[in-house]
Image (cartoon, rainbow, N blue to C red; front, side):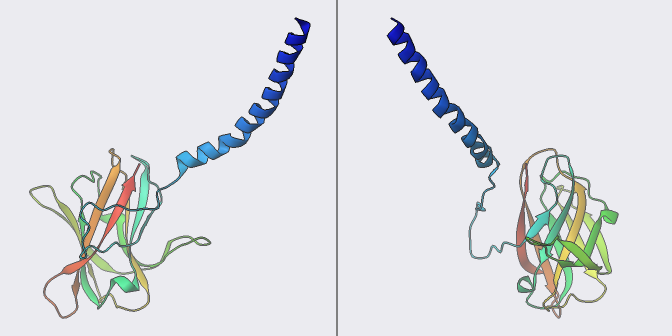
Amino acid sequence: MLKIKKKHTLNLRILRFLIIPTILVLTPFFKNIQDAKAGLEFQWDQDDSYRRLKWFQKENKRRFRNTIYFFFRPSDRKTDLLKINLAIPKTFKSTIKKEKISFCKVKIGGFESRTKCLEDIPADIEINTDESGLRSLDIYPYSPIPSNKASYAIVLKVFNPKKSGLYQFHSFGQPKGKSFSSYLGSWTIVID
């Protein structure tokens, strides 16, 4: 009887010696798996006419104060632009105020630097609301936006909506010498 009890005690000690460190070592890995961000963006209607534009937001939680940068990189602009139109999705229920919108020349951040406005571009900004509830921003810079190597951004300072989800913003630009706007691209913003 004593021999069997010693054997069980020895087995429990060995088991405890192996299991507890394994649990302690693997716990941080399970946490990182849950916090992983997706590296894939999915679009419902994939076609050749869709152009994905770069964007950056400081906060992606619901109801948090947020600053969203909608970038226009040199590759996104083929000619000088006289006007930019930003179509806001109907489901993005957040108060947008004219004084919280700006247009600037921007330095796009990366691993070692932050995204920041280098110079404000003087422009007239209009917020349009349609009878169906669709909202859009019209930005008229005082001088045309050149198609040079500089990057520009529309900066919105808003509170995130109450509902989490994907919000797709579309942009249209009126090139110099044309009387109509053409599609520039789209941004898909994620609110958790």
